[in-house]
Image 1 (spheres, rainbow, N blue to C red):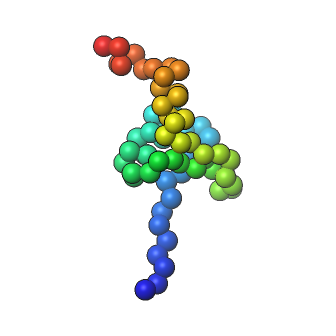
Image 2 (cartoon, helix red, strand yellow):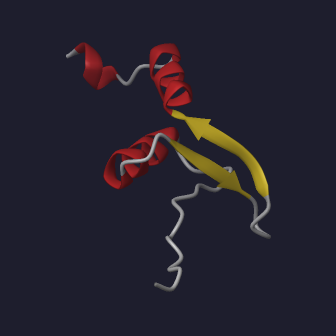
Image 3 (tube, rainbow, N blue to C red):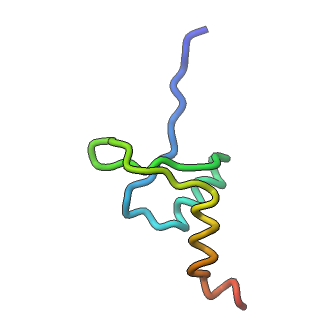
Length: 64
């Protein structure tokens, strides 16, 4: 059976954390690589990073 490449969910450095969280939920992954313009790996956003961001700066809708 030939190897088939799997698309990778990735984020740009300017991607909003809410968009990263939505992409993680939609694709079922636990983390997303952050890549620059040339496709170079700049970092990684984990599920813990998303939770930390929400706790530090919760959206107002959580309080309603």
